[in-house]
Image 1 (spheres, chains in turn yellow, cyan):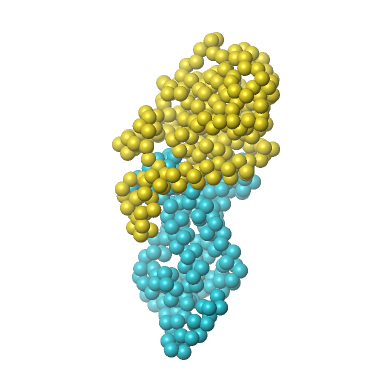
Image 2 (tube, chains in turn yellow, green; image 1 turned 180 degrees about the vertical axis):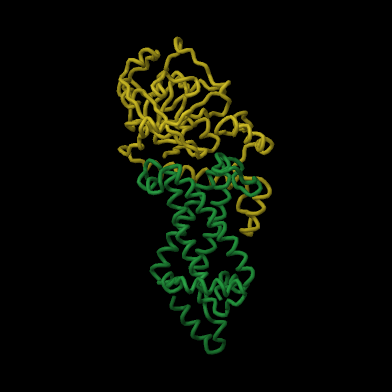
Length: 261
Length: 212
């Protein structure tokens, strides 16, 4: 409660972010799942009873969201590939989107950066960027869909995560791969193992054939075309194979945790 | 069902008109559950829309539900179950009981035109609420179709990979968002007219509450 990051709202681009911020800042001074007076009042009038008592409604919605996680895991077909597109379909410029402006995006020093590997894996060695670049890579042109509703088509190149998990001897019966990032205030996000093993899920090192620029997550982004954008962490610094649900930056604030496409 | 018929017959001899059940219980229950779920879906949907507007306007936070995008999504993906289960029951019962066929068909262009004229000149009869005029038939059948479309386009936005063939039917992810929006707009337009007319002919509102 009262964490700084819960005050920040997502924006599509800078313009929209500023517009959203200007409009909603006073309303977002506390964390709320339900809306303020007017619409609560409207709902009360409509139903004749106060069904949206704030804390019980919040609890009910959390339960339904967990149920929706299970429904989506059941719907998830590990063999269904996200549609791919020709290079001509790539959205240019591809939007930058985060809970901070691009000036505040973390600038990671690639020479000193190492990917830390933890948890249920045989080989916990850390990986330098050059070592990762030496692994076989594949390119995909897929649609990135933001939880906000907009979408953009991008080209990512990198190593399939399932190949890397095999390489490090990960226990793929574990429930999650949990990523931690270099973003300010610490971004993190859990990825269910079925999605982590999906053939299109990759450790992306390039965008549109160029080394990932800062805006898109240098040095490494986890590209998951079967998930909403916020489940595609950028500036990744560590991954942990685990059976524990460790939460995530947006997940903890109420975004559905599975958020599969 | 049989008890309803019996009570009808018993009262028919005494007061023929008052005894007639205009809206059976299942219609009334599903109608109000649908109304509740629709309002939740629309108000939370407006808040979701505001996160990435398709047009040059946003919805005032005084008429949205959820407070912010994350809250609105929780409401939207909770109310969708009520809407979907209720809607499927309605379609199944409407088809199985023959209500759709009896009440909504046939819809003829001549009938719609003459009833529209009659409605606009204030000559439309409301004596028998159990019989829909052609304008009602068209709007009720139309809103059922739009209701199906809003759910299908919503599913294709929610699951553009798992349900990619459905999404492709709507012309892809981005196009499906517009379809979803315009279906919402059509439902809101229907609701405005529907509620206004129900208030103009209060006995129709009474029939949807107590059945007669």
